[in-house]
Length: 245
Ligand code: PEP
Image (cartoon, rainbow, N blue to C red; front, side, top):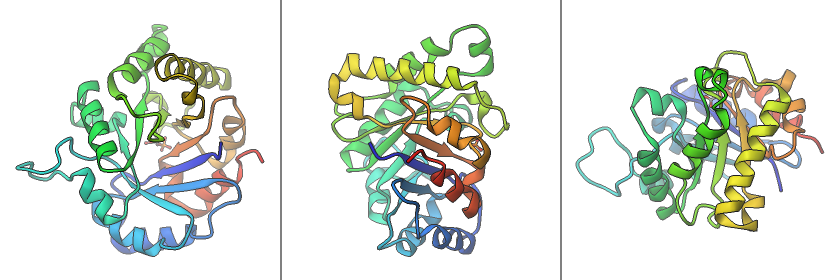
């Protein structure tokens, strides 16, 4: 399957900076799909600036409801209308900052699918959970609780993001990443059948140009979700070009 390199821009940048960054990515990278996920107010302008390119645009969250009295929230259909095709859901920063549990992520994922967006559901253990030997069981539980029926056929994507590796410059060992991805693949295939072999499993957590080639060459790693390094066009493109040919 074609690897996907997705950038999570989090709460960074002015509108002008977002459009400039998008324009620097327009050329894309050979053999790889690119996705950028700007903050809500920048999505439409970034989508317009990337029209005709092979770089897709996503959001970082959506509400579970289609409409209603939800001050400050954004529906999946609004994101679609603004030009997004994907949405990151259940990122650990949302799970921590906004108390999102698996049930909330499940409801948002259903809403995303209903609006025709491709959900990228994030799972990952904390450092304490890893040290306690619970990494596999934590991600399996998150997967079971956050991923709805219809996810695989709609092209839903899973991102394994160990919480302790996000923004820290630390990553699990290559064998540890491969082991969790194998666990996720097995759990998806058990639940959804052989078609889940083509579900993209992204790794996220301190992916940089210097470690991307080794991580992206691992079995069952079908791309990366990149935070900090996605804010620098040259770094993001270097990560995309590190995908094994
Ligand atoms: C992220 O927040 O999804 C992420 C992977 O961040 P970073 O690459 O900065 O660790």
